[in-house]
Length: 85
Image (cartoon, rainbow, N blue to C red; front, side, top):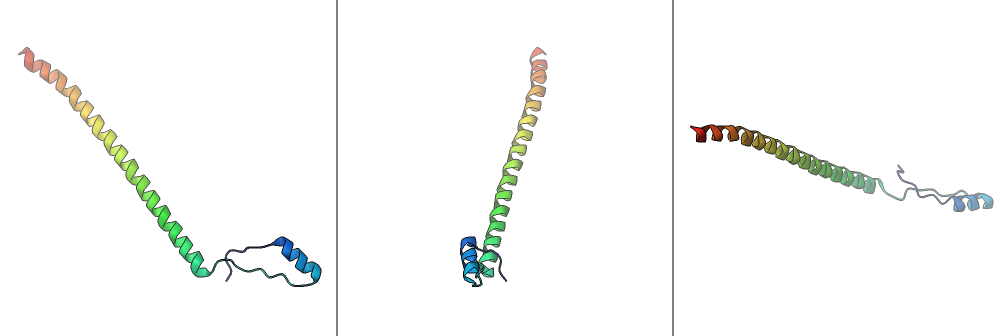
């Protein structure tokens, strides 16, 4: 089964003018094609995984920062009340 074709239309037209049948064939074998697809899938998966980790890390950092701000805002009045007593 042919997957990817490398066609030279000029050569085909010349062959037709001479009355010959133009030869068209795949430039990759099925094994090469399957290997390239598997490699592309693996690269895509790894890229998606890295992007997901980066997004999760960023979200966790923002959440931690927000909790720290809330804690600092709550500590201020408590410390003031402690020192006024």
